[in-house]
Length: 186
Ligand code: VGL
Image 1 (cartoon, rainbow, N blue to C red):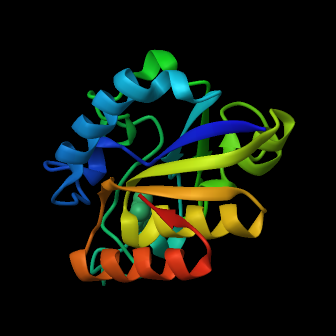
Image 2: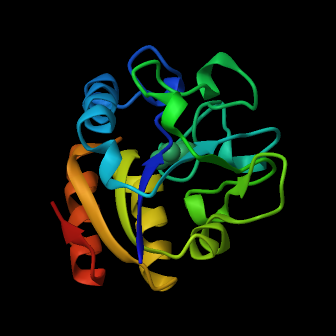
């Protein structure tokens, strides 16, 4: 049994000043950075997911509905796709990037940079059974990542104070849904 901390999409474009900013993005990034220092030793592995778009088709729109289509964000290798500066990247074991040519909300669609290995098999190779999930956005990528984690048989906790939503109400609904699906909300 091993425990992993998963940082979902704590990227500049999802934080104030970014092209798809969530209101609490900076606050949550700061809390996650502090948590890495205070609690990082409790985890066997720490991994991040990153939205990493090259040409994701209708995921990008000039007239986004902010549900299924979005302003241009997290373009591969751009400043907006970079991790928030409050994240301690020195303790990250692996990066899983997703969405190169399609929308990809779940981190479990992500592959390790430069490899074909998906997040789920990577975690299982390391005997990870328990996941703590934090990040952005509660109502989209955190939700999808946690639902996939449960489907893949992991025990999932969501550290809710370290999650930032696009829409507060939708974020709360996503947390309720995750609780009903078997995640523990902390
Ligand atoms: C996300 C909207 C569009 C996310 C990504 O990371 O939650 N949200 N693309």
